[in-house]
Length: 102
Image 1: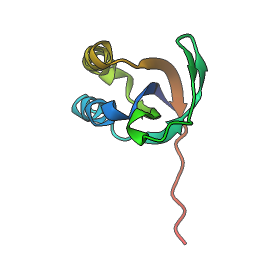
Image 2 (image 1 turned 135 degrees about the vertical axis):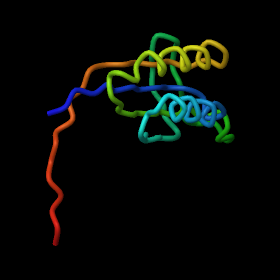
Image 3 (image 1 turned 45 degrees about the vertical axis):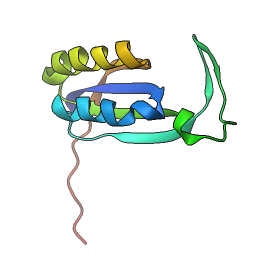
Image 4 (image 1 turned 120 degrees about the vertical axis):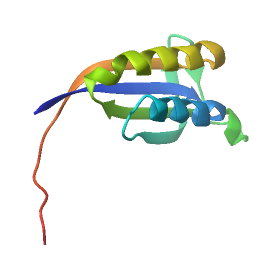
């Protein structure tokens, strides 16, 4: 098992490029993006009934080594403060597995 950080970001689709650029510059090795996210949070209800996909919300999840946290935090905070969005960072453990050759 190896310690990692888990980052989850909820933002507007329009900001996707900026957020992914920040994660890459900070050394986050990969990410997953889920589009057309709906739900309810502290800022109210978000629906998925809009005809324009540019107004959709996205969910980004990524894992990275703990030593990358200061750079991720500083750069992402600047983007989210300017363009909006919500971010959660938590501890995670990566399970080391061997590759199966077949």
